[in-house]
Length: 140
Ligand SMILES: [Fe+2]
Ligand SMILES: [Fe+2]
Image (cartoon, rainbow, N blue to C red; front, side):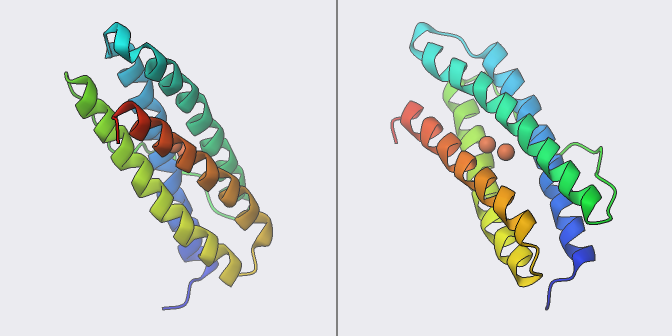
């Protein structure tokens, strides 16, 4: 099935909702995570929070530019009482984001929306860094 601008706007809106939920999830996890061994990753989670908000701003601008209405809905948020389980939840979210943005870049290029593909590549690179930080903290 060929991609259309309308379909791409819908998909970018789902991505936007998941950026909002990722930011909220990171705020929650950074706040409730405890233990001296987790000090470094807690700092990283706070940095991730701000980067996810930045991604949301980029996506909202791009959706508006394409003629869509940026969503104000928030995706699913996961939390836990266990530090490692929270990090696993965050990693699952990042791995999902990496998969989605790889597809989204291809779709943007298929529509010759190169000015959209470029910021999506930047977002993808940041999500890969987030996944690496989480894997390192999990000893993976
Ligand atoms: Fe993000
Ligand atoms: Fe991320």
